[in-house]
Length: 436
Image 1 (cartoon, rainbow, N blue to C red):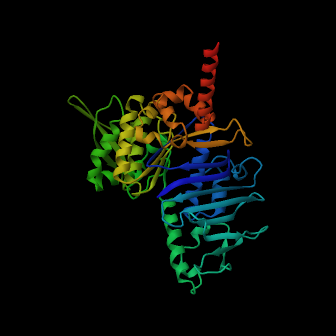
Image 2 (cartoon, helix red, strand yellow):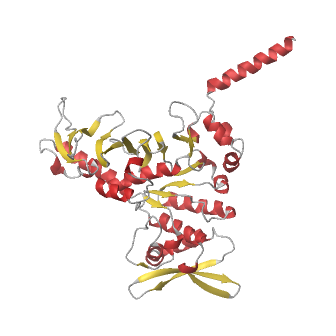
């Protein structure tokens, strides 16, 4: 399971760490850098799907993929490379870092390694390519004493961990390398490939889709297909899906069924009952908010067990009065299916609905007003700040965000020493007044 995403010199970030708890909520003002952080995570997931850099580069430059800008825009101001990485909850070899460089308008992997908590290297790209060449040298751990480690040649047009999943890549003299390295990189592949991103576009969810689709697309285009499999093949999901829909006000949805097309395509229909009247509304007639909530339900129930689900701008189309119900439904499924969930939101009502246990994992994104890298994006986990308890005692999170309390708290933090000095100064002033 992924427990942290890291990035350096990526877009608006000079450096950033995004810790991932069971439920992580990413908050912050517009243009603070929330989307940039999620794009970096998406890029890491793409690499784990075996995407060649030329394909990613084409997708970015042609705006076909959800990473805004062009290849040259991926690097932080004035830089020619950026780094993305992650930590997994593994007992060993739990940290991955990949550096991508832009050279003559093209992407190349210039550095990559997997290490353990002691920074011992499992493998490392230590000889990057030059000019138009794409061959790189990778040194790997042979689990023997001595400084000289064996080396193999890889391509810098694909993530190195995607090229080391076969024991045959390593010298037969090193059986531990043949076993440990492929096992480790396959775990990274599994975890990163299974990240499910959801940024639903209602207009694309109003069409038929084929029954054979199993994995929900990021824009929700095949929503009806995924709901069909969840509803028809796993009856235990039916009440859970209906509970999700109850996040919507002014509706009495009590059932689902599906229109079947001539080519085995399907479209979801909701059954609504008012009094003695029962009506059906197919996806083409459903509101944006209803489709978004259905997409969230489909994502949570279809994601691979133990994986990470990323839902962008979850507040879109959700009535403030039902935010608490929606969040409770998400938490319930996440706990039952051992999912990690990352949400981004602007909705104060949804922030107010967060349980106390989840406040610790709220991450605030902002543009740094001070320091050497003034204006760069930063990520701060509220629970990791010295004065976190005094912040939360001031009121509900949504209220603290809308009144600017969180913004001031994060941008001008006080350490225990600061508070001690303030208290001493206050006592000193009291003593001065007593002498007068």
